[in-house]
Amino acid sequence: MKSFTYKIKDMQGIHARPAGQLAKEAARYASTITLKKGENEVDVRKLIAVMGLCIKKDETITVIVEGEDEKDALKDIREFFEQNL
Image 1 (cartoon, one colour):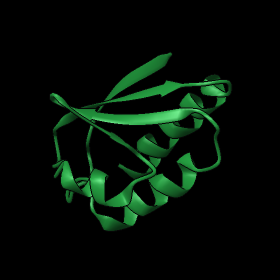
Image 2 (image 1 turned 135 degrees about the vertical axis):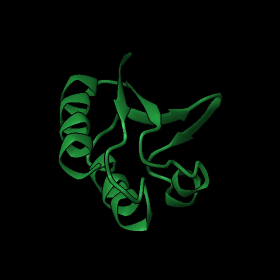
Image 3 (image 1 turned 90 degrees about the vertical axis):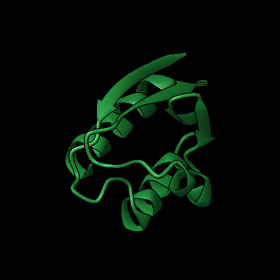
Image 4 (image 1 turned 60 degrees about the vertical axis):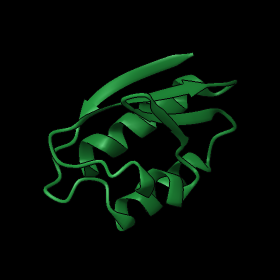
């Protein structure tokens, strides 16, 4: 299992467009990719669940990656956050 924390920089937080792009990016990997805000954890492949976290600008989230391709998945998902959120 690997993880990283990230402070959201996008003025709108995680809204529909980046949440959909994140789900698409995560679908490329066999690993389970979980987004955690506070005590709530959701599978990033589930768009509605990600939207339900209501993640706003300046909030800190944790991304947890677990599985056979976790190293590559973690690298690419982290890059996605840095470039889009």
